[in-house]
Length: 69
Image 1 (tube, rainbow, N blue to C red):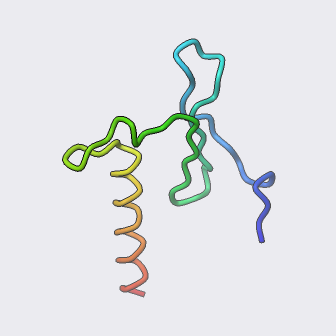
Image 2 (image 1 turned 45 degrees about the vertical axis):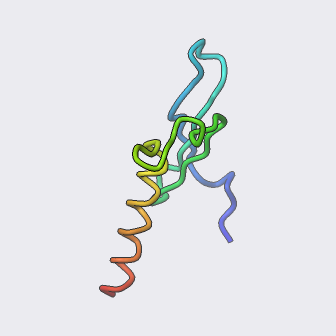
């Protein structure tokens, strides 16, 4: 199993005052996002937060890739 400390973390978002890391990504991963805030508080069924939309799109792509191989 790969250890997270061997991966390359990327800071993808900070707080408004720039003192707190709010979002991280792993560069070499197809879709990995960790967030400190709550995107579900700004989502609704018609207009989901971009994190949710991105996750669903990545899952669809992963499924298509597995089915085609």
